[in-house]
Image (cartoon, rainbow, N blue to C red; front, side):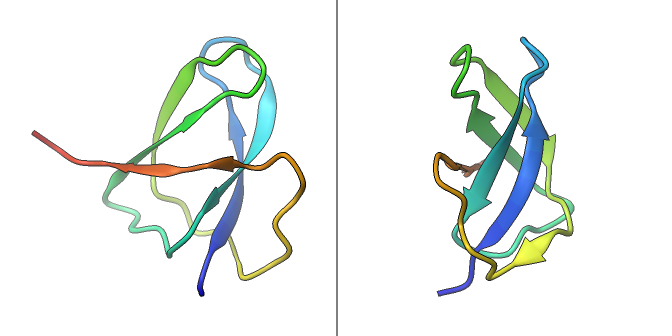
Length: 68
């Protein structure tokens, strides 16, 4: 199964953490990940990053955000 691993900076506490999306990012779509430190939600556009590398321990799940 294809997955993408990327670094994310929390928009609330500025903590950097690792996220994993179990798919490929679409750079024109929105995604979200919950900061493991402060539990704040960070929203971002898709990125081009590492595909099918080892998933680091503690990586959080990245979710697709649908437009309403």
